[in-house]
Length: 338
Image (tube, rainbow, N blue to C red; front, top):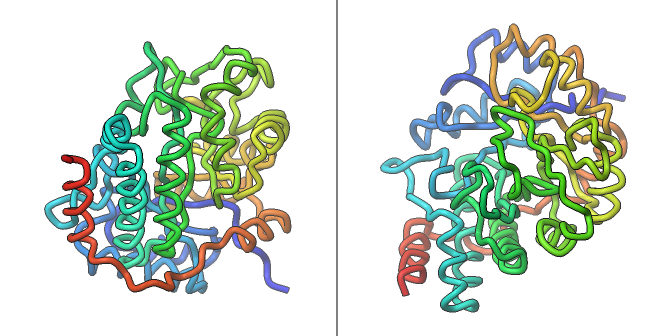
């Protein structure tokens, strides 16, 4: 019986794979690849990059992720690709016309998903379910749909529904909630020292509403009431008691990037801690073969439980005719301006 893929998603530095990178992926067989702006120049180039990775690992369905939310977090940029609105624009429309906003959010999810599907990308690190509050670090900002938990839940649910119609898997994030963080977890370790009872009525509302989503990305944030010593990504207590338990999330869990400065220790130590805590997959968005070797050595293959979750929450290929993405974006723009 063949070994399961390594429980890591890697990110590469360029627009093509080098010979060394192909050999590394062939030898270690990581689960998937994540793309960023640095990896995306033209449609044909993105498709070739996805094909190169899948050929290297020998799996035609190997997950290819991207962090494509719209607004400031759009990895396939204009003028080559369409400009999608920031999520906050849908919250602004919701305040004027809730029904129209939900239709527009659903269409947006389907349009982004269709664009990704057409380029060989199968998973999107979107939407955000974070609920920003006054005084929080601006890292979330207009990436959030709204400051109202119920509105975030409904708009994100519509986006997820639309994206799944396109055949692309959405990843809700940053569970259990990044909206209150007063520092950017890319740079420092945030702590959310707020009673669980209050978070139940605010930050946790969208995540509980979308507990059946296929994947979720876990934030590098300390929740002292559950585990005062460790951030969520490396805390078995937070993963089991809060995310799997209190919030009821049953899908695939992937860490936020292990290169972020919220985590301490070496990259291999971070990867090992993430997977030891019970995470399905560790996300390693940067580096090159020399650093990847240590991360791969610290990782393990996907567990039987993780493989079962991946299979159970797989999003089927689109049954409906694919959208005209450019026309869909024009329609979304009209809706947001109404």
